[in-house]
Amino acid sequence: MAHDTQEPAVGRRLLLGGKHAATVRYVGPLEGQHGTWVGIEYDEAGRGKHDGSLGSTRYFCSTNPTAGSFVRLPKLLEAGDFGRSLAEAALDRYGRMSVGGNGQPAAVASYGDLGAETEQLYVSTSSNRRIPVDLRVPSASTRRLSGAAGAALAVLACQRIATVGTASELQALLPTLTDLDLSDNLIANWSFVVELAAALPSLTTLNLSGNRLALPSPPHAAVPSPTTALASLQSLVLNGCGVSWPQTVAVAQLLPNLRQLRLCSNGLSSLQLPHGQALEAAAAGAGKLSLNNENNSGGSDGGSSDGSHTSELLAAAFANLELLDLEDNAIACWAEVALLSRLPRLHSLLLSGNRLRTVQYTSGFDSLTALMLGSNQLGSWEAACQLDRFPSLRDARLSDNPITAAAPSTARYQCIARISQLTSLNASVVSAAERWDAELNYLRQKYGELAPTAPQAAAGSALASSMVQLTICHGAKRLEKKLPASLTVGKLKLMLERLLRVKAGQQALLLVPPEGSSSQPEDISDEEGRELRYYDVGDGWRLDVTVGDSAARAATLAAAKDAAAMAHAERMEQHEKAIQQFRAVEQRLMV
Image 1: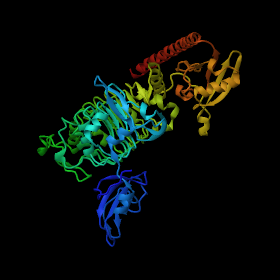
Image 2: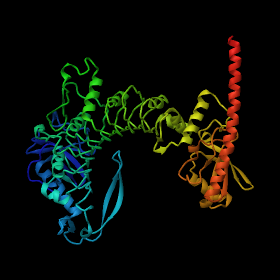
Image 3: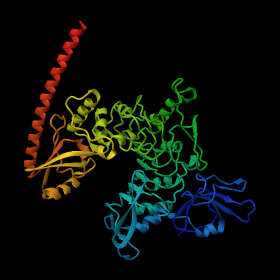
Image 4: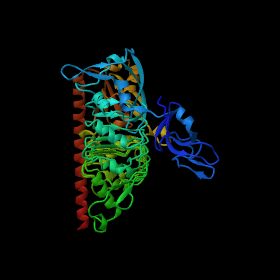
């Protein structure tokens, strides 16, 4: 534990009790109290006792009404852990590389054989959820930095890192580092990133999730040109850092080659910028970062709206951005998202876990190929129709929205049919056959049935509407079973093993739609993770269970599809004749 003997600066990060992270918000006297006190704000809501005020006097303002606390300075210096340097943490974790006769790293200089040790690590999702994993780490004497000249990737999460340390020592430890994960440490401000980039010029990816950063760090004049130290940084992760959108835009101006930016779980509700030619960074008392263009004084568009001007500023700040992750925030209005429409290279926009109710495409988003909108509040199929207007959209996520939750068995084909260029939906590939089925089913629903439909499940209960009646055929056996549409193929095989005495691994399963259906037969033998509802199964379908090799299965499936195709062609021919007769009658009546 690193204790301090000097009065901590406002904004400094520390640990109390070995696990409770906090930020120094005030240092000085308290009314009616003796000595020097330190006001701190805990990261954990409810860990403190107040919001930064005592009696009638406010000393600081915490984001949560019960996150603030006051501690006597001597007690804080004794109990607080103010962290260590990145160089120290890297040395503890990876050891020091020794140099061989050819100038290349030869071995690790360790501080004794510590034996095998177990470390608690976490896998972080894009939304900053941490999943614990156990990793068996070899003894310190056998650890090596990957690659011929050092590590390409280093993970130093939860290592109490507060400063960079000695640049020369860090360069010796990690000379060619490109990816660095510093999640959940004690990093307090942007100057750390500037110093780090200068020490590690090959760094391209930096994860600072869980660090309560003050962006940008003053003084602004000390920040180097974006063409020098920060030019190599291409991917920045700031999940759960408590940063604001204007701060992020200001920092982006210092990263000319930024390709990926992740801002999950920051409570962002707006992507607007403050009015005027400059942005006042809200945290750490930072100076002004100019966001104006050459014609700003008279209105860059000759009287255009503030939204249009903001779009131009964002396009200039994120000129090379390709992926923007805004998942698990509080964006509720599509007009905020539309401000990103002019980003010239944006191809992936992640908005899952927000509060969007509508999608309204007007223009722009020319390069956008992937749009994730899962777990929002989209309540109308008009949202899917609007997605069809995006010129380059190929990949979308719409799961866990009211429109998909209301009819889970038909939601997929509705989405596919309404978004004409979609090749992937909810992380599942859209095949040509699936698109054909989806569009045909959509037309049947919208313009009337082209053929008699299968009997519907009995109305009156949610359970009944989620069950399907299947006829299971195996040799001479013929069984009628009512099964839940959520049943996976894997569980279906286990049930059939008990019913038919056929090993699950030997079963060949063929789903055959009822006569008159426009759906195609499906071989589901190898799709053990899929649910029956994925195939749009309804009452009256048949499940053929056989035991055979892959060639026999393929032949059976081909024969079934040929028969279905012939039947479908006959129905379509009859339907076309009926339409022609109807048109002939209509023309006679109009004469």
